[in-house]
Image 1 (cartoon, rainbow, N blue to C red):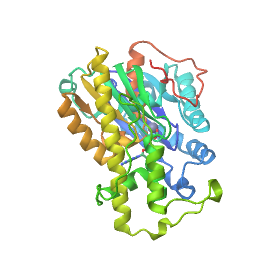
Image 2 (tube, helix red, strand yellow; image 1 turned 90 degrees about the vertical axis):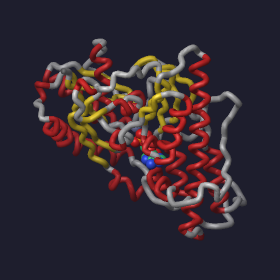
Image 3 (tube, rainbow, N blue to C red; image 1 turned 135 degrees about the vertical axis):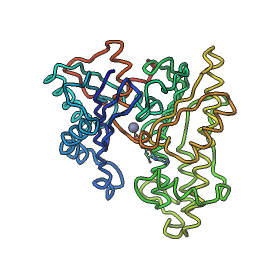
Image 4 (cartoon, helix red, strand yellow; image 1 turned 45 degrees about the vertical axis):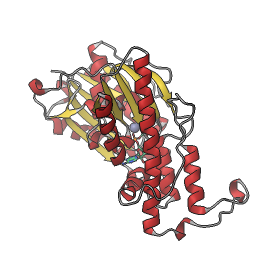
Length: 364
Ligand code: KG4
Ligand code: ZN
């Protein structure tokens, strides 16, 4: 049995977890900073890194305690060292470096985006003999988060080729901006999702930007602008001089819910169309996928989860969605993916850097 301690501090959650053999979560501790950032309507990097500094040690202790293990029973220490806010990443990376140095255990560097694709493969308290043995790879990987909207042809948990990604806003970012336009509060994605469930998705016909006929790239900025103009009318003047015909204060709650539902319908229609295209794409490359792995904050979205499950049935692919706990940023996905690297002996040097960008731009 291999136990890996994972650390994640890329944005506004301080997280640590212990995972057994890459799949079974023994503990998953997350200290959220949402309350600290709420009044600014977004994450303030300086506040985030200070809060990580305060939380990292208690979070690490809690993860070991909940797993019922001592540090010397851990086989390796994994950390998300990219991508993210640099001041936040540095806190987790320094903690991991110190632990690896003090204990002599190997250090493993994990890309946060790649780790989101491991989240759907995590399980809890499963007995080894009942673990899912079905082939997962080659798989189509779909990351839908606040910073990324990307499709990957995956050959293994740690080898993938980028098929397509967003050319402007990430889907979570579009959700967060829609929440601002509709005055639905922070964090935006869950608020829009909640409102949408009580609204009429056919109330307003918002555009679905599908780009070229076989494109698997995404664009959400037109949809966001269409929602803004629907709510506030067309502006006169540009930039800071722009004056709108109406204010979002004029919306009634039922109108807000209908607009949220129409927005959500448009987003998910686009995501499903692109998933269909990407499945065709992989088949055409001679790699028909066994499975679809979805990860990232937006994989918590209720409509996306429903429609992805339907798509899997229609296309004969096994759909793996993360449990709700593993949709948001967490360290179990870091420790889980690290098992694959550990088995191949791919360990990092103790002077591992924190890096702001993902390593998955052009695959592998
Ligand atoms: O993966 P994540 O926690 O952070 C990044 O790595 O970016 O994703 C956060 C994003 C936010 O934009 C949030 O609004 C969105 O995921 N999100 C949702 C839902 N829950 C979180 N978007 C739509 N529906 C949800 N239920
Ligand atoms: Zn994330």
